[in-house]
Amino acid sequence: MAAADALWRALIHRRWDSASERDWNLSVQTWIQTLDCWRTEVTNFDPRLTTLEALADTKPTFTQLKDIASRIAHKYVATNAIERVRRKPGSQRDMQFENALVINKYMLLYEELTHAMNTGDIGRVELCIVAWILVFKATGKHKYAAYMTEFLLNVHFVYPAGLRRAVRYSMLVNPSGQRGKFRGVDWCVELNNLFIKVINGGKFSNHTIPRIILESPLVQVYRNLHGVFQKHFLHNHVTTRRQEADMSLTFKELCTYFEKNQPHKMQTGRSSKWCMDDLIDVGHTLMEKTEGELGQDGVEEDGESFLTLEDVAVELGL
Image (cartoon, rainbow, N blue to C red; front, side):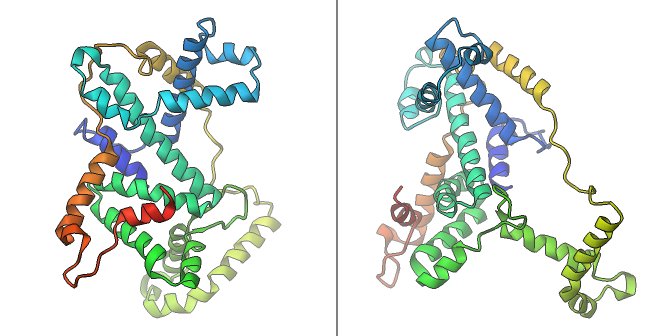
């Protein structure tokens, strides 16, 4: 949620002040942009392949697909070279292409974070958090940046080995036990709060703290009873999870729009109404400013050096 809100602030809210809806799907947006990168790269490599369907008809091998994906990762995702490009005269730049590369960078960073969390890859989650701290700082989510930095510093430099392991293995949980279904532990805490305080916490005059404390140990018993009733009365099909929506028409329309506007095809001299900032660079500058206010040259008042996010990055091998 915090990562999606940060990108919403950077990509939508700052450009259109009247924008108030946050129901855009980051994953769908990433898929569409990735598909357009594939279409553009395939067409550049072989002009006869004007669509991805034409590529599929050629029955490419897995090695060929990996080679195309590698070229896409190098050509259509912003790197440090974007700053050199932006220093060129406007007549030699393509601002829409530059914006597309920067947006791809953060869309893929979001996908990497969600995939790492869903699969329970704690190490990769920590790697992603370092970058997201800078994004949070750049988009005004200063409390997220401060507390997540403090969390990483504690885990890597303050906590003893046993506590460090316990904290890492408690960041994500998998209530269903299914592959790719890990969730943040706070989700389970909030769900338990719902059952304890709202559903089984009594009503009206019985909705008191002593009643909530009395009922809380029985929450799991109540849930098991509900499951038995549903099973015996053939209500086991009842679920709050809806079938995934058919996005084929949406994908088709968006792919057509991207194909018409060609954001991933370099067109010299093309301008744009706005220039997408590199959020990591902006966040890094703000973090350095904050650290400078804490002490000069990384030294606290008592003469001891204080730890920073860069120390965590070094510890993680970034």
